[in-house]
Image 1 (tube, rainbow, N blue to C red):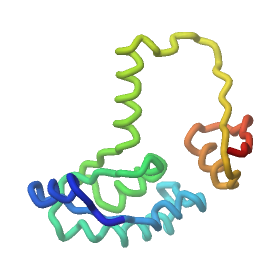
Image 2: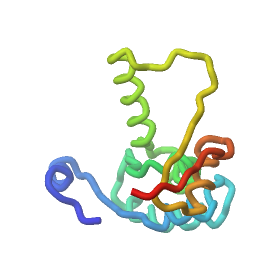
Image 3: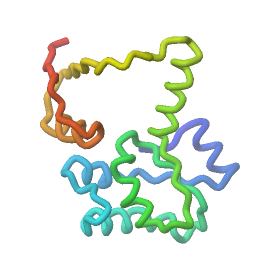
Image 4: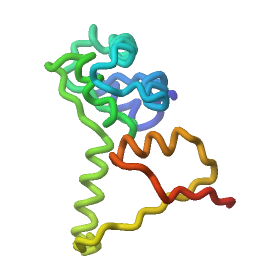
Length: 144
């Protein structure tokens, strides 16, 4: 995906680099996200090697799926590079906003979670299971 507008101007001012890494997403879709998985490690190392000669100290993970690969990515780039996970930062901001607006659920009841999809890919159910650590039971296909 090409850079536009604000991101492009920031890159010029701050020595920021942008790299779409579609194959990392495909690793997740296929379930190759364990930190000890050699395939995941080698693919991550290959794609992220782009940054290694750029003398970076921080890598921002821009996809919400990357928390599942964070250990693989850290192993591929090395411990000296700090990872910033945009998904975690987004969740923290949502939590902060819910508290600020007095909308945070303080109940101890187990929530009833439903997922509504316009297309029911098997990968959604599997990826959701990995993210939440439990089976997705209430997945419904809807027509809009």
